Image 1 (cartoon, rainbow, N blue to C red):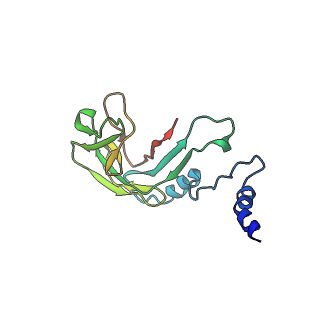
Image 2: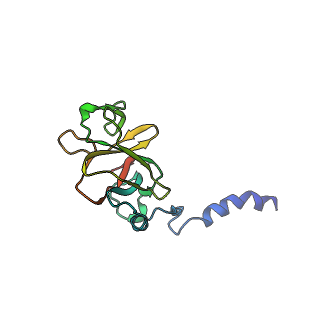
Image 3: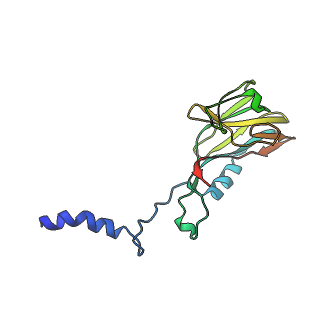
Length: 173
């Protein structure tokens, strides 16, 4: 009996592999972004402003021969979303050598919202030109530009507008 119990971990290891010998991936709950986007669209209650989903993409997102071999995942995340007047790079304090993280923007904060566990956020703001950032580990994450020095800009014309935020700094493309 002692010999069998010593071999038990090996049986469990091999029983958990597929026919190719690979350990099957465990699906990540709540990472079906199509469903997340649909559920979040049903939560919108504002009439003027922006709403959207904050998500994080992680892993190797390089093209793969088989989609099942990709370790790339995008999942909703709970974060603080901050809205500023349109910010140029000259009005921002970069965090180290990063082009996507900032210590601060040298303009007043207009609004902020906390995204829920499904990444949903909404903010009532008047029409205008803005910069949006996600608070990540005490830094402002803003991965986008307009080619004119603007940091992660968007323009709200009227009504409500969807402005999703996807953090990709943990992914390889």
